[in-house]
Each structure stands twice: as C-alpha cells, then as structure tokens.
Amino acid sequence: MQFFTWLQDTQFAHWVASDPSLLAYPTILTLHTVGMAIVVGTCAVVDLRLLGIGGDIPLAALGAAPRLVWAGFLINAATGLALFTTDAEHKATQTVFFVKLSLIFLALAVYARIRKLVFRSPAALAAPISSEVKALAILSLILWTGATVAGRLMAYLL
Amino acid sequence: MMRKLLAGLAVASVVAVAAPRVALAHHAMQAEFDQNNVVVISGVLKKVNWVNPHVNFLLDVTEPDGKVTTWTLVHAGPNQLRAAGLSDRDFFQVGKNYTASLALARNGSPRGYVFTIKTPDDKYIYLTFGSVGSDPLNKDGKGGLGNGHPTTFQN
Amino acid sequence: MTIPALDPFIDFIRSTRLSELFRNQVAWLWPLCESLHFVGLSLLIGAAGFFDLRLLGFMKGVPLRSAKRFVPWAMAGFAVNLLTGLIFFISQPQQYATNLAMWLKVLFLLVAGINAMLFETSYSDRLMALGPDAEMPFSAKVIGAVSLIAWFAVLYFGRMLPYLDPNPRSGV
Image (cartoon, rainbow over all chains, first blue to last red; front, side, top):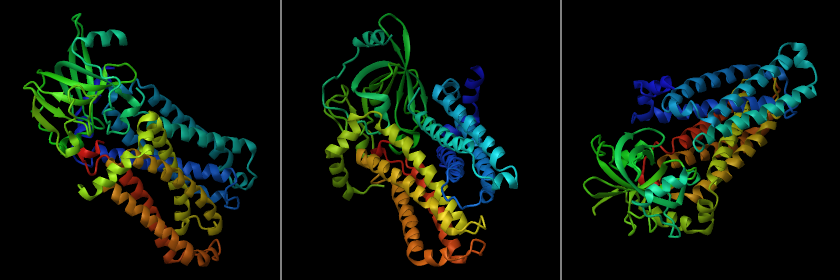
C-alpha cells in the first residue's frame, strides 16, 4: 500500500491528475477510449465474422486484426497505467477494477485461442468454422462487453 | 456505523427530508449521492485535492465523542472550478474551519457531493446549479454556478 | 460557450416530465446508459472501421458487397448511442446545449452521415460492381478516410465533453 501512496504522490501522477493542459488528463483519458474502441471493435468484427456475418469474406483477410488489437492494447496499457497512478491507493483495492482487468485477460486469452485454432495455417483458414470456435466467438463478445461495462462502472462503484 | 455517524452529526446538522429536491446538476452524481439526504458538517480543512476527474476537499470533523472522521467533499472537475474562479492556490485555506452542506453518499461512507461551503470568514460559496430549498446552507436558493460564477455572500 | 438564446430551450427540456423521470427516478439510469454508449461506440467503430478500411484499399480480395454486411452492425451501435445520447441530453440539457465539444461532436456526426449518404446515392453501385481484387478508386478512399476520421472525431469530442469547454453552468 505504501508503494501506491508513493506512486500517487509522484510528479508524474500529479501532472496527469492536476495539470490544466488538455494534453494531460483529458487527452490520456480520450486515448484510453480510442484504444478500447480499437481493441473491442476489432475483436467484435472478428467474432461476428466467425459467427457468419459477411460469410464469404475470406478469413485470411482478417490477418491484420492481431496488429490492431496489439496497437490498441499498448495504447491502453500505457494510458491505463498513467490513469492508475492518479488514484493508485484507491484503485489498488477497487473490486470493479480487478474485475475489469480479469475480463480483459480472459478476453485476450480467448482471442489467443481463436487465433491458434483458426488463423495458424492456410488449412485452418480454409476449414469450416467449428462449433468450438463459434462458442469462443460468443464468449469473446460477452467478455469484451463485460470489460467495457466494468471500466465505465469504475466511476460509480467504490 | 452509519447510525453513529449520523448521531454524531445531529448536533451540528440539519437534515432536509421531504423538501423540494436540490438540483444535482452533475448527471452521474445521482447514482452515487442521495440528493434527498443533505447534511451540514463542520470541520477543519485538511486537504484540497485538485484532481481529475473530481476535485475533492478533505474535512476533519470532530464528533461529540472526540473521534475525528475525515470527510470527503466531492465536486466537479478542476477545469469547471477553475472556470468558476476557484482555483487560486490560496483560496481554500488548509487548517481553517469550514462548514459545508452535502448530499450524502448512498453507501454510507463519510463522503458527499458538496453544495454550499461557508468559509472561515463567514462567506458562502454556492457551488451547485439551481439549489433550492433542501440545502440548509442555502434556503433562499441563491444562484450558484448557474450564473457562471459561484456567488459569495456575507452571511 | 454562453448562448443566452438557448436558455428558454434548456429550461423547457428540463421542465418536461421525461427529463424529470430520467433525472430523479432511476439512480442507475446514467451509469447504465453510459455503459451502453461505450459498447455501442466500440461496435460502431469496429464495424464501420472495417468497411472504411476496405474502401481505403486494405484487405484486397474481400468483395465490397461482403464488407458491407458489417454496416448494419455499425448502424446498430449507432442506434444504441443515439438513444442513450438522447437520454443524456434530455436529462441534463444544460451540460450539452452550450458546450462547444457537443457542437463539434454533432458537426462530425453530420459529416459522417452526409458522407454515408453520398456513398449510398452516388458511389455505392459503381463500387460494388468492382471485382474483389480491383484497386479502389480515389473517391472510395476519400469516402473511407472521411468516415474513419469523422467517427473518431465524434469519439474524441464526446470524451472531451467535460474538459474542452469548462462551463460552470454545465455542472459537469
């Protein structure tokens, strides 16, 4: 806990939380939303395609998806850390924050599994989409929705 | 715990119950704070956290039994309060006595959304848009931030 | 911004029973609507973004007609956000009506909408007729770029609502 108190009192944390510039808190917060839209949006499209939307779109066309997810994740890891420092003591014990992180972790794990099952080889890409993959796609949509909601509820739940 | 807190405040507070609702201008505040449960507390200003997303004031309130509870008074973002002219570093004086009316947090913690602040030199700062009636420190519904600047009055 | 001419409009909206219902009866309405708004925007940006990227020339081999299958999903996301957005506005019109960030958000919503209509009326048929491996013409790329930029601008100004135009009256 002492570490989190110290973190909250660093110059960086103070800058993020209190600097009047729009480039501080407001921009960091907005970039966090951008990253979320990229990660969740990309995964949603992949999931919907696996569930049959735009069924004649070759799966190979979604090859760039991992790069988008990775880019969005990096943006959010960085902005997320910055936001965390401003309220470290509180967030370190905030239940809904840990729920959010867990859901993100699970969603990424599901995504990794989908990639392994579907995107690992031309043969896998050409194969019909199994019911296991479809179930994973549904799970992915649920987990990302959950993570998004948990993130928003951080402003309301202690 | 909650009952003890309220009992401790009964000496110095007026609780408005069925009065016309105070307008909680801030959307999200209704989810966390109960605008029908407004109390008045007095204490020593311990700290001003001029932070995003919400500026908050820490007030050390001494209860009748001598116990000191730190209350958190929450309001808008630093940019809003800066635009209202409240951002001067020396405006709020740590260590001095302040009285404030606040809508209590629904979860029973010593926390509230602040409506009106009475300063050590008896000036009133009306912080909330459209306060009417159920703010014990602002019974006449004197215009607050709705006019663009917080209104300060002598008594 | 201060726009005194809008005060009667703001006061009128606040005086409606719907506004009071939203504000006072359901403490959890706001967090719920915000959550839906964020989910909606993710779906919108993902699905519309996918179509826009195809228009920009990425993902060659995907027929434009197939990519367009995602547009109804983008519209669903938009519909959720329009509904929740209206709830926000009706509950607390003073937070938005004179807020510069809101005006800019609406501006870019109009840009996105007009751009989409332009595509539908003047370019869709021609572009749909192209083969899946064909090079996208410049017009398609412009439409795709404008759409992508506009939707991200909508997101940006939406998130900046509490920060860009700090107006004490907005009470944000």
